[in-house]
Image 1 (cartoon, one colour):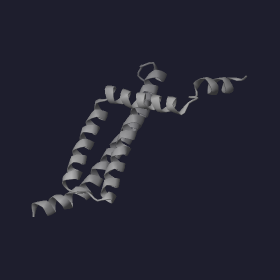
Image 2 (image 1 turned 120 degrees about the horizontal axis):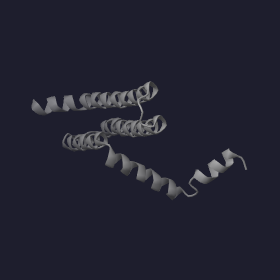
Image 3 (image 1 turned 90 degrees about the horizontal axis):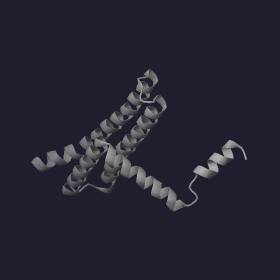
Image 4 (image 1 turned 60 degrees about the vertical axis):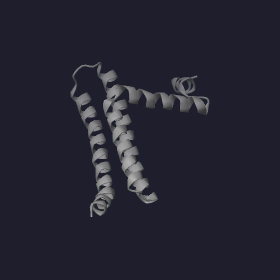
Length: 132
């Protein structure tokens, strides 16, 4: 048995529920360890409350939830990249490690800006209508 076969057999989840269990452990880890992830969940909660108040349509809910999911996914990917970069660099300053971390953080920023734009497009007309 070569290395590839041994590695793929030992590290693969044999049961679907094992995969789900490990995925849930990952979500719990990012929630516990990443302040920004918790902040983004608070923002999502506020947006959901606003959506309920302003009676968003199914189409609007789709955009709000999809853009919010993109932010949470990007934050999770950023956390993974940061952890792997720290492991690979041994926590020593390295220009490539900095570049990887900065690009991953930029990914989160782009997704957050996109999510804010979606929220503004959906909520500003509703807020204006409510005020008038």
